[in-house]
Image (cartoon, helix red, strand yellow):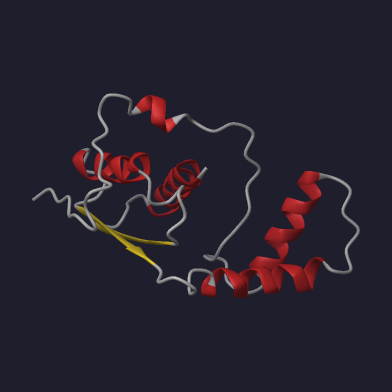
Length: 140
């Protein structure tokens, strides 16, 4: 889900701006979905295919991984608390409305009805990175 969401957001940003930054920074918590070999491999593919010159991946320290997200959820919760929500699309619309008042470039909500199987897509191309605490993949 992380990779699907990330690629969807990159596609939308490219549609708006007609370019992506040369260097991309991603901050994640240390959850298994974020630090697994498929996620790291897909980031390497984005560099290898020259979507970005480099990608910097940082992981929040233990106990501090939800600071930014907690603020967003607080805004959304405060907006939704008195709403009557009957459909998933109504929930998405209300979440986006609650977030749009703060920042038009900020987080937003999408309905996801299917997700690409990135593990299968990258099957045979993924190296086991679990031995390494950090690495740098860079194309000059």
